[in-house]
Length: 286
Ligand code: GLU
Image 1 (cartoon, rainbow, N blue to C red):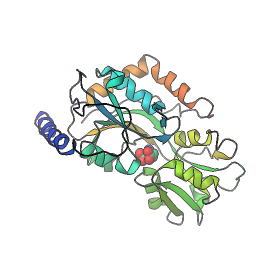
Image 2: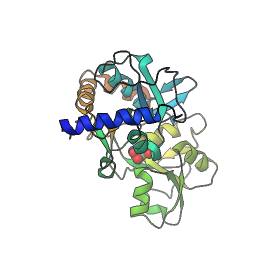
Image 3: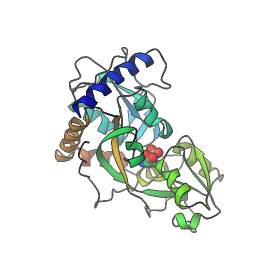
């Protein structure tokens, strides 16, 4: 493990050098220096954290501000690792780009409704989980015939490239016409415009989209989850940060912050977490 870690740090340092001259797409917060900390204490360095920008209540860009449960959890964990607010640089991490952004050193950590899966663990490491959601469906408020994935045969369904949600449909419901988009907000727009019959992803994401001013009263979550999505903190393979992140998540749950952050970020959506699964215990770091 130690040997592995040192090798990975050397690799990460090489990656940082290689990529420091490149633009990494949309970058939030003016962070100045691109030198990042791979150590547990922030000491004057910047940490680049991958989040979603288009998932209200989870990871959302609102002008110069970033809001949502993932963002708040990221701030809490970064604080426990020794970073101040202004040392955090948020970077947009769309579903399909999360593994490559960690592998190429464009971000140090990802908090972006990122399910822990064996396939992803082949190329990145995870701390956590810090939340458990379930895949569900978003439909028109007046729809009564779509009650679960079995009722989607021959229907047009939108989901996001690189997500477990799209993969599950391809693997288990091949009779569904799947339209893939880069983000769930685009799927919700397609649904509101009548271009698709439903949108699928995690229930907590769908609840946030259904509660926006544009969609309120027009879209609804079916409310019959059909998967278990354990949200982890994505870190580069061989990172030595897993234990410290898990300790921080444990403290966040213990001190009542987790509960407060869930309430604050789901307020007005009607969403309640699955109590049997939440708050979750953290996996052992490998
Ligand atoms: N949690 C699922 C995943 O990690 C779906 C949500 C997302 O695309 O972020 O693929």
